[in-house]
Length: 559
Ligand code: GLC
Image 1 (cartoon, rainbow, N blue to C red):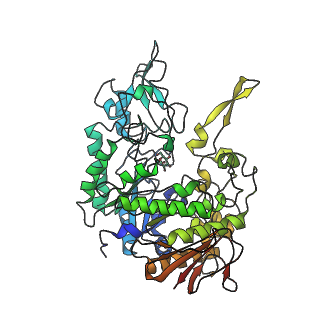
Image 2: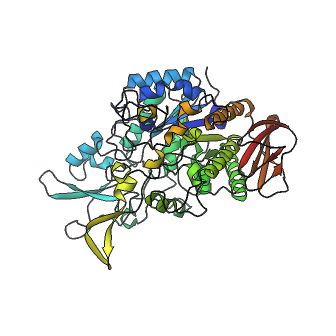
């Protein structure tokens, strides 16, 4: 059934991290056929769409966000034919599909980059990327002091074919992720070709990776110093590296391409910038929507939630977009864990200590996580969920160092200091990275790799995954999975219009809002006992006794 052009404005979207979703051939990596084999499961969640993180050929220097070929499927994950079959099966289940577009950088294995390395300085091949001569007498100092997100410097020096040292190239992320030169028309046109390639196959939407970084001020590049410090970026579009005003020309051109399709293709920007600037990417003549990440860093706190919700609805409306809600994704510590740790826990330190620096209260974390999810699902706009949250998964905090894959772990190292001096070759890791939320899903409690594949999964799964496995929760009335299924089915029935009215509860710890169709949502953050208003109870994230709810609970009512 063809969807109307506005279908995406109020959608429930589920992020699949393909390498960790379901492995169909037993090689330890999730794959496309694995996704196809789970369409029934996805359908049981009443989703409007799934978003697939990169499944393209990649050397996996950054979990696939280092793309070697934008118009193909990684042979370890399948073929284009498998992709088409998956797309057909998902569409048949009325689930739209977003793919991830990674335009800021490619993999160093991309043909263009390999060609650039073999070409002369100043050549057309080098001009697709950002090559510069080094500073210093022999070019031994990087062209600027810019820091990358993963490695100490955002510049890596090349070696010429005769073994001498050559120019440097820029990478905001790992050295295996060279940044494109977006002033180059060939680069611009190639991405339009990629968008059409997937849109022609029937892909419905695109998630745009680091959408704010594409344009750089080449005249001032030599003085660039910053790393990815999203919120410190100048708010007038004048930053050297991020959120420059010219970046919007790219998306205006993309929108024209999206609108050639029926229904128009949709897109969402990943742009770590100030909220007001973020909405520029969501304008109707650009990408249409932008991720709101405000809740990823917020405590489970009534005042904060109310402010974030009100601000984001207002902001989205001001640009003719609809708001987005995100509690989890493949880059962040899972929300059931965040909410179960003492306030102000430094998550980086907690992970580095393998979860020993503070005690995780799993019961509390999950209760809050479900209360927050239910609240978000009742809001106007799109809720983006991340695979595994429906199973109540926590972050896997104690992955052994040898098993870690994320460049955020591998590359964030400093030399060990003893009495102010660098000691030997010992390096200290300063960030454990994001592998803990990317551990392959548990499908069955009692089989090898919990039914993910056959024997081993590419990241080790902890024993406690058994309690969370799909077959442990399936058909169990009060399981986490059943809660998600019921909530998403109800959401499909009730979601309409974009109006939201706050209703006073007389208690600062309890939020209550009303949506069209008599749909009410009441969340008790920290009130021991709150008497529910009159109405039929549709669903509740925790048991209700005598018409009263406890703290950390959300209830939907029909009144
Ligand atoms: C985005 C992705 C992240 C990746 C980075 C570089 O932030 O979500 O996983 O490492 O871009 O592509």
